[in-house]
Structures are given as C-alpha cells and as structure tokens.
Length: 462
Image (tube, rainbow, N blue to C red; front, top):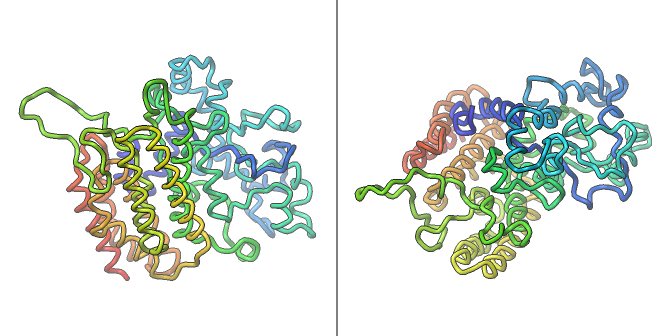
C-alpha cells in the first residue's frame, strides 16, 4: 500500500501503511541525537540493558510507576509500535539491498548512509558491551545515551530533572522531541541522516513529517497520574504546531548549507516538490497544463517549487497561535520563494530569514497553553480563504488532511467532541483523504472542496 492509498482510509489506515513501509525498508525512521543532547563521552548501553523483567521487559504492563512492558511494545513484530525495532532488518530486505546496490553502497546493513537512521548509529567509542546495531532504532535513539542515568534513573532520589542533567532527553518538551524525530523523519547533518534525491531515485520514499502522528504511532507509555506529575499532559495541538515549525526550520537550515543544498551543477532536488517534475507529459498541441500557479509562491513560471507543505501549515497555525508574528513569517516565505528565481546566494539569504521567523514561532508556540477552542480555530484557519488557495500541490494537501485529522483527534482527547460525534463526521474526513489518495489522480479544486467540507463538519460540532 502506498502513502496516498493509505491516506484514503484515514489516519488508522495510514498508520498501517507506515508499518508496512518500515517492514519493506522504505522509510528511514527516527534515530540519532543532536550532539547537544548527550552528555559528553556518554555510552550507548544497548537495548538489552533496559530489558530486565524488573525494568522494561515484563510481559504484562503492571508496573507500579511505569508500565514496564515497553520493550514488548517496541519489538512487537506486527504492530505500528514495533516499527523502530524492525528498522535494521529492513536494510536486509530485497528492496533495501537493491537501493544500496544502485547507490554502490555495498551491503545496506553495513552502509553508514543507511545505518544513520536504521539503527542507533552511535560512534564506535561510545558503544557499551551490550550495544548492537542489529537492535535497530533502540531506546537510546530517542532517550539518549544511557550510561549517565541508567543505573539510577529509577531510584527514589532520582527525579526527571536529574535524569535530564545526566543525559536523558526531555521528550515531553515539544521542541526537544521534534529535534530527535526530525533527524531521520526529515533529515539532519549527522552521519547517514539525509535522504538525497539519488536515494529516492534508487527507491527510497519521499520524506514527510508530522510530529503528533508519529508520536502516537510510537508511544509505548501511558499518561497516567505519575506521568502527569513528573512531565505534564501532552498537548497535541502544541505538539503538532511546534512540529511544523521545527520541520520548516530544519529544512531551511539544511538547504542553506552547500554540502546539502547543492548536488554538483544542480540543486539538491530533495528540497523541491517531487510532483512538480514527476508528472505525465506529452507534446500534443492541445495538452492541458498539469499544475496551478500558487498565489503564495511568486516564482518564475515553470520553475520547480520548494516543497512548502510544512510552511503552509505553519502559516495557518501562526495566524491563530501567534498572530503578531504571522505576518512576518508570511512575508519571509514569499521573499524566500521569490529568491528561488534569482539565484542560490539570494535564496540562501532568504532561507536564513525565513528560518529565523520559523524559529521564533516555534519558541512562541512551545511556551503557550491552549484553550478548548484552539483546535477548532486552527482547523478553520487551514480551510480558510487565506490558506486554501495555496493547496495546489499534492504534498501540501496531504499534510493538510493529516493536520485536520490530528486536530480532530485532539478535540476528542480534550473532551470537546465525543467519540461518537467524531465517528459521525468520519465520512467527510475520509473524502478529504480520498482526494489525496494518489498523486496521479490529485485534483486541486476537488481537494479544496473536500477539505472545506471536512472542516465545516468539524466546526459544526463546536
């Protein structure tokens, strides 16, 4: 099942497709830690160090403080929650080996370009005795090198703050979580953590990122009373919004670096909208243009556009959560698109200005608390008159459907909408998914109509 086909069935079906994609080795999953997150010299002790029956390796989730069956969920062979544990095995699949062979990498299971995201690719000098690359994306890929906190993070004197001081990554912090997940679900400058256009040409899928959805797929814990006491309740709206801002920031940071932004004579096409070039073409005199000009992208006619799916979402949410900064961000986005038609130096300068605007938005949204009507307002913004005309491309439209569904689920969790009411409008949401079921059949006007219908059905439940 492909990305688009899965979208047609809604969020749960897309989760199933994501699991299948991992099994086939098509998706580089979250891994890798920013250098600033780990204690200097910390060792990665390996999954086995967390696997005891008195730690996280129980067969039943009946621990007094945490479930203690987290390892069982992490390595579940068929569920979406077990995807990280299967990431290394995906490299040994027929498809993984074909990709590596096309790129001249040798065996995929030994290629640093692959291991950066398909395993906890710790430096050789930071691997403990029980560390194994074959574990795939293990506990420390997300939680940090454990040597500083492993022995005492469960002890009575230990606190969440003291564990963080010893190198544990504070994943309850939306910006910290986004940084970790983006390393592979979007790309980083770390070893083996950037999916190039060459990799996609060899068979790797296009990368897309949505923090709240990915977090729900990989959640191995319960937000019980103890979790709330130590870390607070997860705000899905904040998580989604900050994820969008950090994705824009990461994309522009990489684009501005010559080692990532250029590929010989050409730009690195990873950053551009795939479907702006990968379209059916013919030379018939009466052929119809296969794209719509985008009112928010003042680029020369026929120029491949930068992939702005996260930029569009960030523009929509900024109008609700940070209205004083929204105009600055929108102006910087327009300047960036315009600069793409002027030359790389101008584009890099504009990218840095847009990155700074996105960074400011990330900080502003991460520090806010949101009321019960926030998710309703953001849905209305995504489907409103200002943003809707920007849905001219498949990638941005698919991101919009995921956003609307994410925000609908947030409303259910907040108790603003009942499960039954959400189920009652599922058909409208699924029509929006159907409108992006395939890039080959994507029709911008039909999508915009379907998205508007879904948004109105949600608004009616306010």
